[in-house]
Length: 176
Image 1 (spheres, one colour):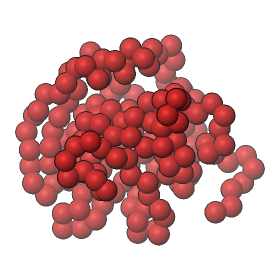
Image 2 (tube, helix red, strand yellow):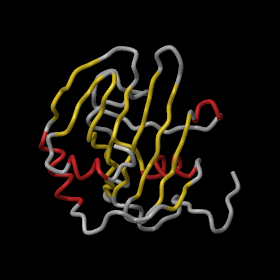
Image 3 (spheres, one colour):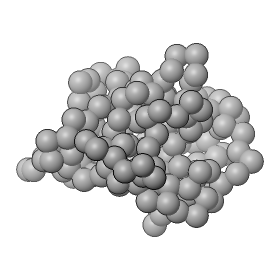
Image 4 (cartoon, one colour):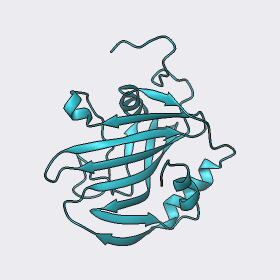
């Protein structure tokens, strides 16, 4: 895929984003649907995607420690890991649009610790509905990978983080 010189690309960034927000809808019941977006509220861009498989675009999934989640995650996993290279490849396969930066002065280490320790409220389940998930991917430079932390999911499994940062993080997602 050839890219224009001034197009926003992230694969050759020396200092990758310290975190990215991610919204995703994933459903394999009745029909395959996979769409969502990555959002960098600090630098100000959004990268939307829809059914990459239908477009013959390779999609790199995160790996989870949860049972039945690999190699294809469901979306409600509370953890996940993806290499920087694979995550940035996903983002670069789709057009990015500039948006107004909406976040600054964030203590990502405090948020990470809170998400790791807070646990989740389980709010019910449905079947064949699909999963809508809101996550944050936090970069770990020593491993050159991003760790996925679920903030909220609903649909087949509805979970919400008990972290005191949950409401603030969800407020950065459009239309939530």
